[in-house]
Structures are given as C-alpha cells and as structure tokens.
Image 1 (cartoon, rainbow, N blue to C red):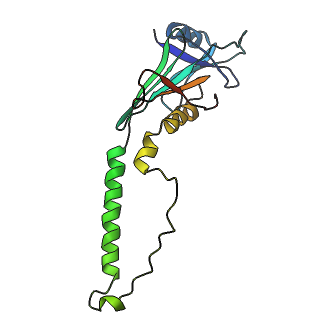
Image 2 (image 1 turned 90 degrees about the horizontal axis):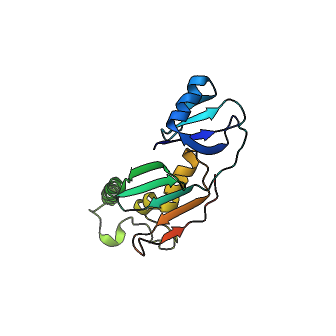
Length: 182
C-alpha cells in the first residue's frame, strides 16, 4: 500500500496516510497536495489535526561504491525507496584529467634549454599536505552524506532513527549513526 506523507499547517511532519485518504482530503478541501524537493508527493493539512502523535520512522542507507540504496519506513509500511547512482567514475576521471593538465603546465613552465642546475624550480614543499582528508570519490559515497541528503531535502518525513548497513564489516548488522532527527 502506498503511503503519503502528511504535514501540519505549520509544516511539522505527521504520520503518513493511505493514498485513498489523501485523495479524499484533497477532494474535500481538508488538505493541499504538494511536492518536496526530492520529488515526493505529500499533503499539507489546512486545519490543525486533532492529534499529533507520531510513531518512530527510520531512515536506512545501504552504501556502495557505485550505487547506494536509501529507504524510509515505519512499522507498518515503507514510505520511500531510492536508488542513488554515485558519481564515482566521473569524479575519478576528472581527478585524472586534472593531474594530467597539472603535469602539462609544469612541463611548459620549465625552460628545458637551460642546464638543470640553473632551471627555475620552486623549492620542494612537503609540509603543505592536509591531514585526515578523504578522497573526493569516497566523500560522495559516505553514508553520512547520503543520510544528510534525505534529512535536509525531505522535510515531510519525521525520522527518529538513522541506520547505515556497512556491507564490508557485517551486512546483517545495522550501524546506528548519530544524526539528529529532523
């Protein structure tokens, strides 16, 4: 059964509802249909609801090198599924192209007609390396970044838990990430 997210008139997330009920609310003028930044359809109530109790909703991420899966669900149903295609190969190709261009610039900057000892080389600098830097290809595949995408882009889902399945260590044990609920 397809679940439709519901938000209150002041844009606070509420529990999702059945699609037939959401259509009835829109038809009767009790709610307005809207689209989130992620392209998810949700309804915004016109009047304050009688109750605003919510159940826990979890966001799960299955990180991968080329593809990642994202799921949002609660005890009764799955609210949202996404299959992210990560730009790993594009980032890798651009870094390679950047390295080739940089080597070409260095080669043009040096006068090869002069003896090596008289060439204008800059002094070697080895203390300019940043520590704890992740490669750009990994930053796109980082589960925390993918969870942040879902949490910042989709305000129509009230999430209480965030899980990332670490396929390298144990694919059955979810790894709880310490991200605040939206």
